[in-house]
Image (cartoon, rainbow, N blue to C red):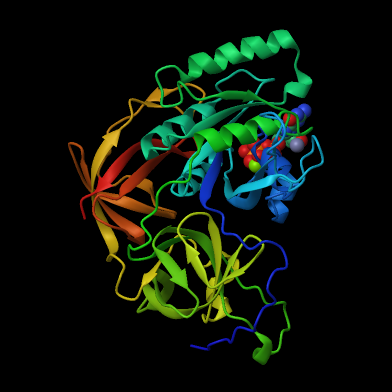
Length: 423
Ligand SMILES: Nc1nc2c(ncn2[C@@H]2O[C@H](COP(=O)(O)OP(=O)(O)OP(=O)(O)O)[C@@H](O)[C@H]2O)c(=O)[nH]1
Ligand SMILES: [Mg+2]
Ligand SMILES: [Zn+2]
């Protein structure tokens, strides 16, 4: 395999600090998740032509925000994403850097939202106040958050610029009754206008209060989930100037240093005697980048770009999405078939009319999310609460890993339950 050489990169001039927590965005299509992320980070996460044309998020977007607090002014007006206090003009104190994992809300992209959910330490659950709450994917995202165990939620009542006070109160009641009996029952509800940046100071305060940075095990064998992968070379670059493949994702445990030898599983598909097999990759970390600059060491939490010595053709166009990065020989096995302990929901909540979930049948096709990996498979044997599934694309996962199970209903994949990997 051709090995590309990574050129030295200029160190970012601004503060190089690694984001320490991943905050997701949840909620129905068009509720304003990406607009809110833009209001807090300055970044419009949708970049692909189809996203721009259709006006919806299709791939998981990410962007970082820096939270500052003015020591002199009153709360919550002293919370800001700028180093200068908007109130008194004085110097605000840096609190922490956060990464947003901006998910799509469209009903056809539930499986993508689920792969983003694997990284979330907490989430902003964005609701549009001008429409009735809940919409179908509001219900489906909340159920997913509950099942994955995303407890730290802040509810965002968005688009208050286009409603009157009466509708605001009515919508507040709708939200309260939607949350009753769920993990978000006591979550704060922050009215905002993402488009006008109204009340974002209060939202930042709630993020600081409600979504703490989790304690991470830095001594654990490192593990990174790949969310995106790229070829950063411009077309026509001379071979000698090519830089190696770049992978973007989140380190979920441990840490990496520049120079580390890494293994990537399941890796890349190769054709062998008419069959597709996956081959793991071994390479070296050539650079680590976090939000505004490069670091020698990246720890778990937040989103990281990892430059490697891989041939960039392997990483281009998200070629390694769903893979897992670890220390050489430090990753679990790659599985081509799995056995799951299954717990199905009573109802499919992601459709307009919540229909009952039928049992899993032998020979049916299902889509599984394991970490940030999405794969499909055929059920080879379905017993009471246990299913054997032959996977189209293998997964690298540990015993008892949580698996989201989706079934095709009315032309799209709907979440029907969760499973736990028996092997
Ligand atoms: N009036 C008003 N419109 C808003 C506000 N926030 C977002 N919008 C509009 O709502 C539409 C959808 O916004 P997005 O931010 O793309 O919604 P989204 O939740 O990211 O949508 P998906 O990612 O496709 O699920 C856009 O036309 C926004 O301009 C707001 O605070 N007020
Ligand atoms: Mg969006
Ligand atoms: Zn101030």
